[in-house]
Image 1 (cartoon, rainbow, N blue to C red):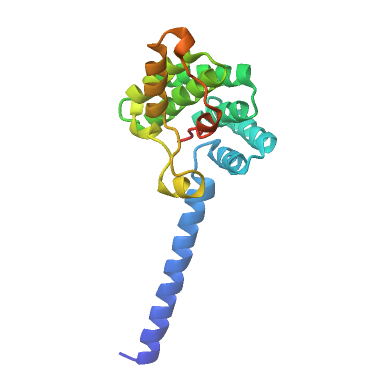
Image 2: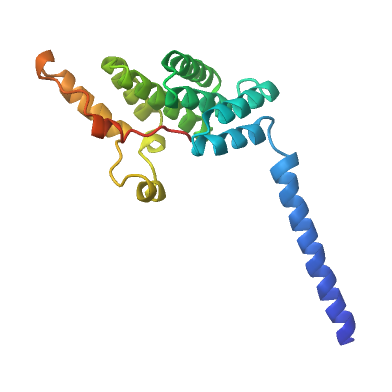
Length: 202
């Protein structure tokens, strides 16, 4: 076989594979995505850098494209939680929890993670508002739905933020123990420890 022909064939095949691979990646990333995913991803980017109003705008756009998009609903709830809009946060998590409990399939681990995170986040809102029994109920519900999903941040997050963050399990145990004490002996708020509570977003 002629070496020039073989070289040309190899070059053409490499170029063809690159074009097909790039086209497939672009199709999967931009064209073949569920409605609302792109907008939710944009909202998540803004949320991660604490640009809350921009994040909310993108989550709202996602819900215009796909009503009941669970990532967008979660994102809105987290924005409200992080900006101390307690009533809106509880309402958003209430709606998301009810929606997921009504529609969640048995074989949907991502949905279970979202439900556990919604319970955990609503628990944090109640916790911050000193509604400790409600917070405890939500933390327990989160652990029952999917304990792994609310087990706390991963190694990278611990390195970047805090090596000893509070977790749903730790906080639930602490609240439970404190609620067993006489009211005058309870210590349910410790600002430097409470500051380690992190939001949950699957």
